[in-house]
Length: 312
Length: 253
Image (cartoon, rainbow over all chains, first blue to last red):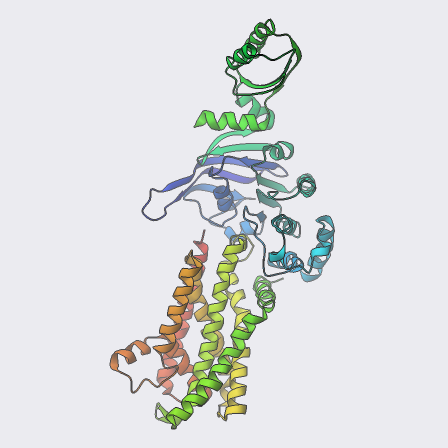
């Protein structure tokens, strides 16, 4: 059974005398229980609007969305009882200290005093917040505020977690720790919907990924499925015996999606039939011998760029 | 923890982190009563007639100062919506398992307590230091009136705090509201001798209803039927503002 169900969801913003903006334009998808679902898209694609609709901050203009069977428009309070949310903006209680930030969050989610205190001790240790408990949050760095914000959601047992660019501003060690914790939560049955601009993060974390742009779904699936959707997109690493102008010109003639030349090393992202690519490379190798050669499927970033540019 | 209690705890912790806020909320009304009251009592050197009853200026002013304290607390509390919007927590709050009404009521609970404390201070100073005689028996009614009217003003300001995008616009609005609502009312002077247009405007002003109600419960002055009508009008004003404030929060994003 799907924990998050979205059907033909649309959101139109009307501001002042300007034309209405369709932030979401008929998006549909479903997320099964215990999955980490990645929502990717360029800035302004509609990711945050989608999260706002699913978390009942704003009502969709049309279509339907439900979280654990509760409609976001008709049963918003029931939806809010199922979710914990990290929004894109570093949302923290700036006037309160770290301890109160965590406790108030738990209290507002209906967790009792004693249980909140018990959870506080565990979370403080896990997120290295012990020395900061009495610090007022407005005095902390952006990265630490973000850490407090993310730590909060682990104070509650909400079965569905929304993370809108949750690791932005965190140091790499803490980011890794948060990612491990998210994986553990999903294994324990929590459903996680994340948005991120860091595609390698999505690649490592997500079971399923959906790419949206201009409020529309471009593609969705597992990473291998998305690679297939990106139509024969290859990443080729080549090492030549030497580099010269004629070789560089021949390489440019391949019309790769992306090409970087670093001394004798060449990285190409190529779209097309693999056999045709190998034939053309063999032709180039007659000019300058190839001493190193590797072909891989494209990574998520290349798939993302290819899909977004293709649909624009 | 119950949702309203949790919001109450949040506001309590927020407000008690900043002593300056508490100073403004609690001691400015007392200063008004002592300084303004003493100055004008001497200047007028006589009693005021309110609904046929005669009272001294300090006694006349005391309910007005309580109304001012309640108005100030409500205004400062609604300003916290801007802080919440600035820190981003406002939108996160909208994803918590609480209703918009619980959020508003929880926020006002602590501030009603604050307004009640301010009221107690003003009454204590008025009675002990300035010789005002109050109706002790009606004190619970006075506190009930303070609670409802503080909530009413808070809900009214919340509509604007949530809807307005810019803090400077909101500050201009609250300053204008402060001047207009307090000075075109029965807070500082009796309405009987004022020009008809002024009197008419003041009678439509919820601040006049609040002051008349407090004057009646504290001092026993004013016509009972009129005060009852004003109390009912303020109750309706409070419910209407709660409805529109909850709607504004729902539409905030």
